[in-house]
Length: 379
Image (cartoon, rainbow, N blue to C red; front, top):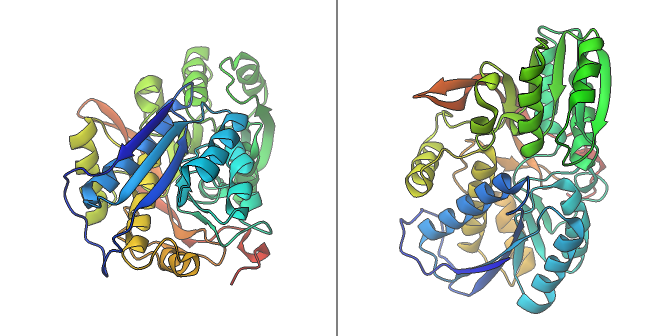
């Protein structure tokens, strides 16, 4: 379950400004490495460790543990990391229900937590905290983009998502920008693998489109069953539902599907190109959005470590807030609530060299801010 990685590895050096503080830094990484959501956590871990390796920073130690997608286990691991391992920083959680179980207590103990994925609304608004930085997005953002996109072609959409914080945020985000009618709104069980009942509801609903947020194994199961059902109502979703980690399992049923994300491998900037090349070279597979966000999280930490001691919390937080690193997403900055201000793109699933992947076909939002920042009292 536990993997301690000392990063005294030879690798390419990523350029960061300033002079690095030569001090031991211990980072606790809690992520999902087993079960139906393992693909997401594996991509997170692999990108993060590769970025640290390539930086050449020999003073960073990673303590990596598997939460098995169980909130109670994540809480236990977090307490051990804080109390026994004495980690300086924490990151890694994929799922929002686990983030809600771990993050508030961690930041209250004066540990800085950087999210490479989960972005629950509860931590973006009134419960924002100076020690909490989200390097990925606020949960609503990708779904808001698809609500905006759906207005172009659809008037009666059926929407569904799992019944947990990110699922609720997803449908809230979609509805915030979608102007049409809802043919149905359903919350499924987390980890559900049989969607016969939901597909029957969709068939009978009169919907002209389906929007779904079902990450990991849930999305694979839904798309396979949907394709087999013969229902020909077009589907769309956030990038999580059609991420690189799930496309091989979904297969050609995903071809042509539109989805939203802040990154795709064809995004035209040098940082992204270098990331894709490094990830493919190391792991012999294409990176997902989870890997891209994790890569950025690691490089944000590295940039801050080059400017301030992690022991000086105020200075280190200020260095993080500057976001002085080359993001794979291009322009990247933090809003007042320590959540990103960034572009959100519309992607389409295509096949390149017989490999399913995503390509950017449009921009849904430029410099998009989340809807909860105004409730945050940080300045």
